[in-house]
Length: 402
Ligand SMILES: C[S@@+](CC[C@H](N)C(=O)[O-])C[C@H]1O[C@@H](n2cnc3c(N)ncnc32)[C@H](O)[C@@H]1O
Image 1 (cartoon, rainbow, N blue to C red):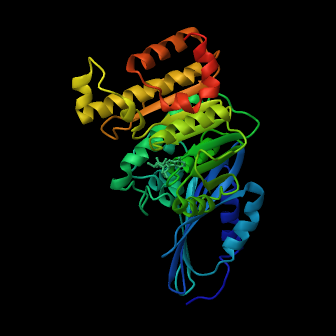
Image 2: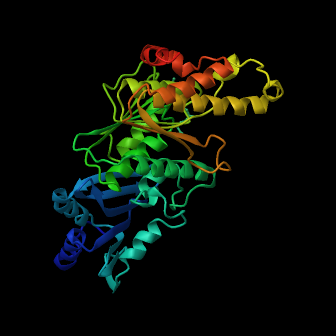
C-alpha cells in the first residue's frame, strides 16, 4: 500500500492548468483508500453568467454529494485534490486532448495521452438517455441520480420514465412561457412538491441552462415526511441556500409574493388553491398540471340532456375533469391572465396530461370572458370551487354582467 506522495510538479501543473483552461470538459478520479472506493467528477457549468465547477463525490455505500465552486475557489480545491496520494485513476478530458494518469498499488505512476475526446466524455456521462429535452440542456446527471430518476450508471430507471418525461415537458412549457430574465430574483413556488423532482429540476435548469442569475425556489407540501428528503437533495445539489422546502398546507402558506407558481398533479382542489394563491401573490406566471378532480362531481346533478353520460362513472369523471379545467382557465382569464390549456405530455404517459399556462397581462373582467364563464357555469347549474375561493375578487367582475 502506498503512503501520501505527490504526482510530481509536472503532472500537478498539467492537471491544474487543464482544469482551469477554457478547453476543459471533465475530470474524473477513481480512487481506493482503506478498502473504500470513491469517484470524484468535476465539470464546468454556467451559474447564471458565471463560470463555476460542479464537483460530484460518490463513495461506496453513500449517496452522491454535489458541490459547486467558483473559478476563484478552484486553485485551492485542486491543491487539496492533488495532495491526495492513493491508488487512483485520473482522467482529464478537454477539447484539445485527454490525459490519463494511473497510480498503482506500489506507487508507480503511468501516464498516457490521447487526442481530444472531451466531447465523448460528456456524452458518455449522459448515455442511454432520451435526448433533446430541456434536461439535456445542462449536465443534469447529478440531479437525476440524486432525485432517484436515474440509476447509478446514469440511465433513466424504467419505473421513472414517466416522471422524467413529465419533468422534461414541464420545463419545455416553462421555456415557452418565461420570456424575460429579471435582474431581481425570480421567486418560484412549487405547490405540492412531493419528491421535489419538478422544484429541483426547474431551479437547476433555470440557473444552468437558461442563464437566470438569481433564482429562489420554495416548495410547499402538507406531508411532513417529504420535507427531509427534499432538503437533503437540495443540499446534495448545493442549492439549499436558494431552494427551500417547507411542510405546510398551501392554504396557510405565505411566501410574501411570487413570480412563478407551479404545481404538478397537486390533488383535487390543491390545484385550485395553487391558482388562487398565484393570483393573491400576484404571480406573473402560473404553470399548473391538475390532478384528480372530485369536487365538481359532488355537485353536478343529472342535468338533461346529459343524464346518460353522467350516469356512467368514467364518463362523468372525464366530463367533470374537462369542465373543471374549463372553469379554471376561464376564471384565470377573467382575473387578467392570458391563459392557454394544452396537453403537456402524450396521453399514453399519463391521463393527467393537461396543463394550464397563464401569463399575467390582460385587462381583468372583460365582457367576453365573463359572459362565456357565466354561460357555462349557469348551464351546468354549479358554482366551481375556484369561484367560491376567489369570491371577493371575482364577485365584482361577475356581477357587472350577471
Ligand atoms: C400527486 S403528488 C405530486 C407531487 C409532485 N408535484 C410530483 O409531480 O411529483 C401531490 C402532492 O401534493 C400535496 N398536497 C395535496 N394537497 C395539498 C395541500 N392542500 N397543501 C399542500 N400540499 C398538498 C401532497 O401531499 C402530495 O405530496
